[in-house]
Length: 159
Length: 159
DNA sequence: TTTCATAGCGTATAAATATGCATTTGCACT
DNA sequence: AGTGCAAATGCATATTTATACGCTATGAAA
Image (cartoon, rainbow over all chains, first blue to last red; front, side, top):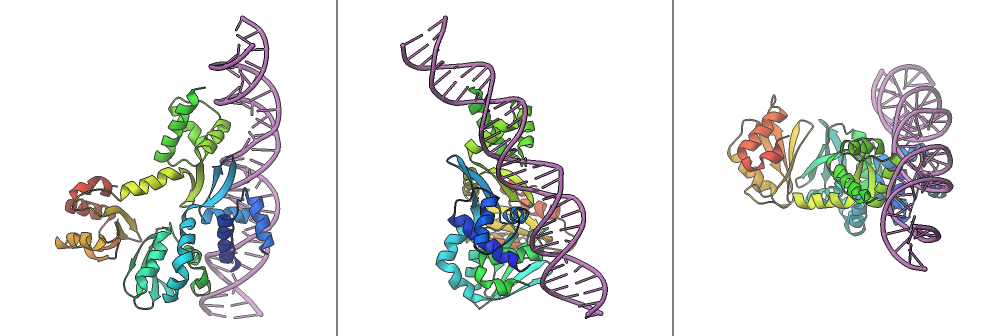
C-alpha cells in the first residue's frame, strides 16, 4: 500500500530515462527494481501520472509532459528548497503547508512549475502555503502529487 | 489520396477544439465534416500527427503537444489595465485568478478598490489571487462582478 | 500505353490498454 | 483484538489502438 508512491516515483524516473514502448516493457523494468505489479496497476499509475504515449520516429514511447519540467527543477533546487518544509495539514478541503519563515514562496514556486492538475492554485505567504485543490481532488491525490514533486519528503507527506 | 492532407488538418483542428476521448469519437466528428475513413486510418493519422492520449481529470483525451504549449504562450500576452490576467477558475467555493507573475497584487488592488459586496476578501500572492466569496454568493455572481470591474475581460470571465 | 513503384486505405485481427468487480491490505477508532 | 472504511491491487475482460496483408489508384519511366 505505501509502496504505491515509491512505485510512482520510480515509474516517472524510468520514463524519463528510458524509451519505454508499452506497459509490458515497463513491467519488466519495474521487476528489475523489485516492484511487482500487474499491467492493470501500471495502466492506473500512468493515468495518474498523466503519462502520454506518443509516436517518435515510427515508434511509440511513453513520456511525461509535466514531470519533465519537474526533473529540471529537482536537479537544481528541489533538494535545497524542500529543506524549508515543516508540515502538511488539511482543513476545510484546503491544504496548508507550513515552512520555515521565508521559504514559502520558493517552495510554492517549485510546486507551481509543474502545474499539477490537482492544484487549482497556490498562495504563498511567508511561512505558509495555501493549496486550493481542484474540485473532486481528494486529500490523497494531493499527497501523492506532493510526493512526486518532493520525493525526499515522502515520509512527512504520507499520512 | 490528396484527401489525406486535408483530413490531417481537420483532425488537428478537431483535437484542438474538442475533447476527443477515442478514435471512434473522432471518426464521428470527421463524418460530420464529410470525411469518411476507418479507425485504422485514424490510428495512422494520429501517429503521423504525434498526437498523444493523456489523462486529464480522470478522462483520456487526445492532445497535440506542440499546440498546447503555444496556447499557454498566447494566454500570457495581452494588453490592458487588466494586463496580467491569465485566467479565472473556481474551486472549493473559492475563486482563483491566475496572473502573470508579479501582477497579482496590482490586479487585486484594483478589485478591492470598489469594495464589491460579493467579495468577503481577497488575498494576492505573486501570480495568484484568491477571492473568498461572501456566503450565499454564487459563481455567477462573482463572474458578473468581475466583468463589471474588468469589462475588457468579459469573454475570458464569462463561462 | 504498359509496367513498375508506391502511397493510401480497408479488413481483419493482433496487440495494447482500460476498467468492473472482488479481494486484500493497512489504518483509524473502538 | 475487533470492526469498519477506504485505498490498492489482481483477475478477467471489455475497449481501444496498432498493424499485417492485400487491394486500388496514381504517377513516373520506358
